[in-house]
Image (tube, rainbow, N blue to C red; front, side, top):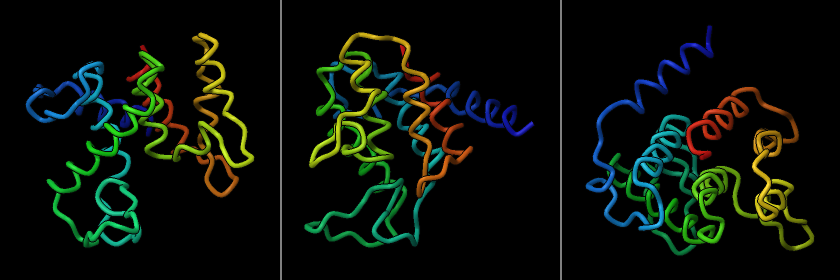
Length: 168
């Protein structure tokens, strides 16, 4: 029953008419505007607006040492931060073609290190499969549903929704 409500909510969210080009003038030109707007909406839906969860503000933006942001920022500021962060990640993953947006949304939530590796951590199996051109990435993508070492069903539902809406 909860899954049906989730699917209904996501359907309603994504069927509203929105001009992505007007809302996101800095969207990279190599990214499909409809999918980009869907990615923003998915993040907003699952992250919600953080009001008192320092060092995170807005829709999950982590405050950097050089930033002077208040915890209680406006909805518009949170939207701008989200789009800016997502565009930076899109630029990082631009060489991965149609999987760039999917990887960017995942990296927005889990960070870059679990995906690309570094400092003793190996590259994720998801990225290895994408580099090889393998299209069967569902199991690897849904594997990013852990928090504190435990699999969390709500995170798995989020990953599933991201995969179905953004994977082309």
